[in-house]
Amino acid sequence: MEFEVRKRKLIEGLRRQGISERVLDAMKSVPRHLFVAESEKNSAYADYPLPIGCGQTISAPHMVAIMCDLLDIRNGMKVLEIGAGSGYHAAVMAKLAGSGHVYAVEIVGALAASARDNLKKAGITNVTVIDGDGSLGLSGYAPYDRISVACAAPEILDTLTGQLKTGGKLIIPVGRNYQQLYLVTKTNGLKKEIKGGVVFVPLVGKKGFSN
Ligand code: SAH
Image (cartoon, rainbow, N blue to C red; front, side):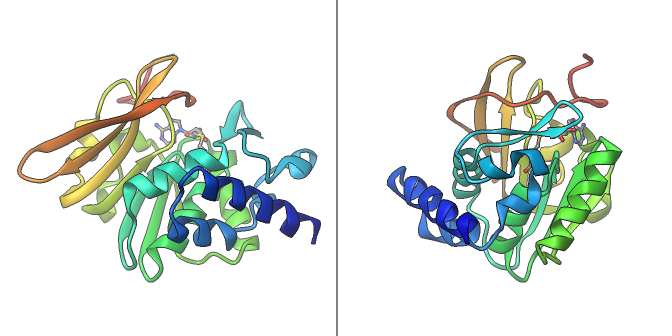
């Protein structure tokens, strides 16, 4: 019950920041405390990033909310996430995708395994967590309606824009220590909009940063 009270306060704060009701509803229905370590549970509904092990973090709730709003995920969509981490962000996107599906790629095996566990505990069945290098996208299920990148890339990756449907959208932080959050819409060409400054852990792998 305590978690419910904290969650409600978090949602109120996000509403004041202008997050849409659709995204707030999705976040209301995901128990974030099931996606953080035992030692972090008291902070599960605080609006800042938390450690999830292996030197990685679960993004702050407002960042998940902003990215979901910008990506405009609709019922039935096929979504790709790069950097599943704890699985929380994928869970929120899965609620928005409804009858659709989220494929979440994670390069650290231990995190992929715990993301699967967390999603199962949360009762979310329309996310598939895949072990692999998401800097190459995930060609097996392409093309995607939406792609969400939860780590900092060196550039807007062709490997990802190449796996988007026409009319599809990609959200991706670009830069090394500090990033610009890009929203890329694929029409005949690629429309690129900068949506603000952010800080994410680096994308590693073949098309990522080498260190
Ligand atoms: N979305 C996550 C947080 C992601 S943190 C959540 O909700 O908890 C960024 C994640 O990206 C880390 O888990 C890191 O291991 C992963 N990552 C970094 N480079 C990657 C790559 N090339 N492919 C897949 N995952 C990668």
